[in-house]
Length: 270
Image (cartoon, rainbow, N blue to C red; front, side, top):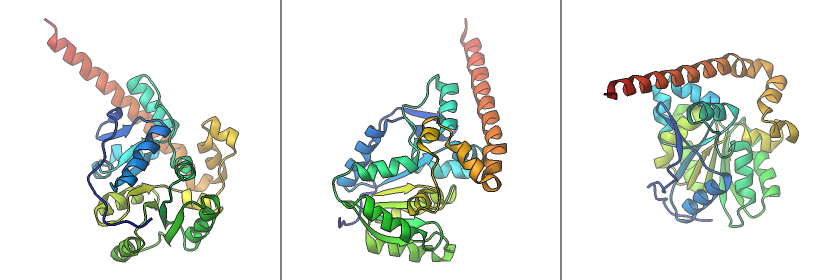
């Protein structure tokens, strides 16, 4: 689908959000998120989207700069860690788990209108393999460009020019966090794409060089354990030390909010 310059003014989103410190995560069903994203694309409005998991939230809670970056993105909930956080602060889980690895294929597969897609990220050659598989799975859409994610900061302008020459409806950015969210937040206003999404390992999965957990494992919300068992050296710290840090931090934050609330009640009491 050809397009002219996109409208950078954000579309309206439902007000139901979970907010912790400076991070706000929208609480939507998948169907509602699809409706808003497709409407934005059809109207030529740009949406920068991120899938916030526990690792991202921990980084944001530890870095004011990264938290500021995430303010420029519409965030959806991804994973057990976000559900536990929501339960602790709000007494309920998010409506649905909207991890990008499932969300993006469902968005593409359920959209009968032709969309053009650009893949940015992964190692050289991987995005091209993913593009071939996308063409087979979703023939109603067109991949109009690919670019690996191993580029120097000095090459950023050239990468953006390549994306803009293709003028995609959807830009999938797989640079890992925090790099992919930072790239989107810093450069979205210069990019002629309607929907920009940080998608982590999605390009690797689509290319077939990484393997998803079996469906029953995903249903039990244990994909993190499957990944840890397959890649203990790379993911060991993330799913052990950093997971413990995340749980400790959100418990401390929750206790602090309860203490503040009690002090406020005491001060307002007659």
